[in-house]
Image (cartoon, rainbow, N blue to C red; front, side):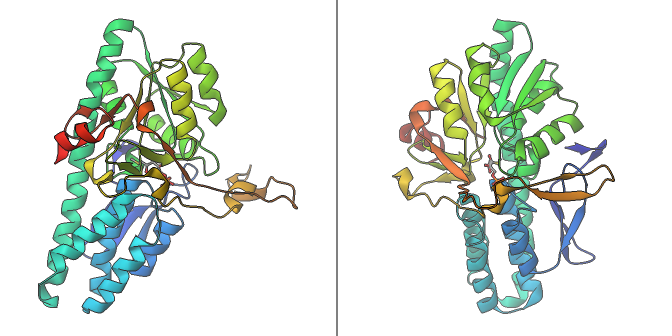
Length: 358
Ligand code: MRU
């Protein structure tokens, strides 16, 4: 997608300099910086500090992490250790483990001298497949938006939470892909963007990328969705997910669950968009999902730009207060109207997911 009229992906390999290039998302929306990741340590730091983030993108970044580990040391023990460190860099999004496992499977039973070529090829494939999946999610989700527009004949208002946009994937996004496709088809859409405290991915990333694509959007405080739904100002919700269980339960950015409850109470359709790499086929009970708890400083401090164009961080909480920063929650399948996947739209249930993917 575009930034200042120029097309980008979120990650790519620079063959000449043997580095991985990323858009540093911790600097957006105020500064657009392309950063070089030179070794496995850089990749792990980028994932932990959320310079790259969003389930599909951290999967893509991890696969290039394996490539950089091989460039660093032609030694399978080092690559194995790097793969474990990558998997532990963030716990909730399953795409990370999915991508690393796929890379390591490709590297099993081959000679170390062939490893770089094989790994680079596989990392590129993982990213290309993600682009294709996200594009198809868009085409499948577009049909739902078209249906609403046919009935309403006016701007379709869509609420989204966090950033499940192209910045969270390699291109297109998951939740945003149907929106981009609808916009390209000339369907008028307006997006309610949940700010998404504490890191403000909605305000800093979703609104930013929608602005760059010229899609009308309005940032709202996270607690505003409920009243907008009561007023009839939301036609549908579309969110992303970091891990969807085969039972249909959806783990996503904290606050998603509350939005789903409000949607259910107001008969607003609540859709979750995901590529199949986000499905967890093993965990049955959502209480077994590892929920990331991040540093409370993300709550107590806030970053912005001052009048001199300098990025500044300030403390906003009482000095003596404790804070807790759980990064994800789980929306039970019963509150999900449908899952928008690369293969089609299905019910959030074991039967439907198995029929579509197994
Ligand atoms: O903590 P983040 O910013 O990595 O969380 C991202 C989300 O919760 C997204 O909704 C999810 O990864 C889906 S991205 C297509």
